[in-house]
Image (tube, rainbow, N blue to C red; front, top):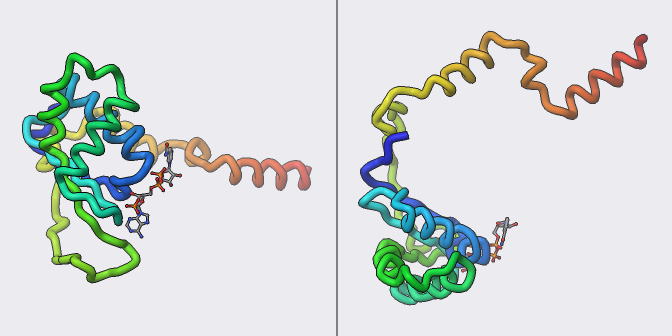
Length: 153
Ligand SMILES: NC(=O)c1ccc[n+]([C@@H]2O[C@H](COP(=O)([O-])OP(=O)(O)OC[C@H]3O[C@@H](n4cnc5c(N)ncnc54)[C@H](OP(=O)(O)O)[C@@H]3O)[C@@H](O)[C@H]2O)c1
């Protein structure tokens, strides 16, 4: 798939354990492997009182501690950390430093991704529309139907 020109990642719970131990180290791995676009921003959201700079330091420590060996990647790590930002907010307090505005949601896949819909995706949609509905049944539904059948037979 074509790499997009830019990206904004927003991590709800960016100050939490999952972020520190898994998400940010995984994003760093993508960066190191050249799989992130040239322009990207990673915004961590949480209640803790970090500044952008203290959040960057915290995430650098986490990547070193929980990620793959970074001893040869100091420059990449510093460059990656400059893409990290932190925004403090409490979801239980709507309005507290939160500016909400309407956004246009009228977008098309090809505008967003920059290429046509992959064939596999088309096939999946087509199969779902034309195919055998039982192939898409949930396990609990199949179970219930089997019980009904065994009662009636
Ligand atoms: N940790 C793992 O390895 C792991 C693995 C798989 C799945 N998960 C799942 O991932 C989710 C997060 O896990 P976690 O381990 O990261 O938990 P955690 O360490 O308790 O972190 C929770 C995150 O949510 C933020 N948060 C909580 N209440 C908030 C509020 N009212 N407003 C704004 N931010 C709020 C916290 O901000 P502050 O800390 O700044 O208050 C923190 O960043 C959980 O559903 C967990 O089951 C975790």
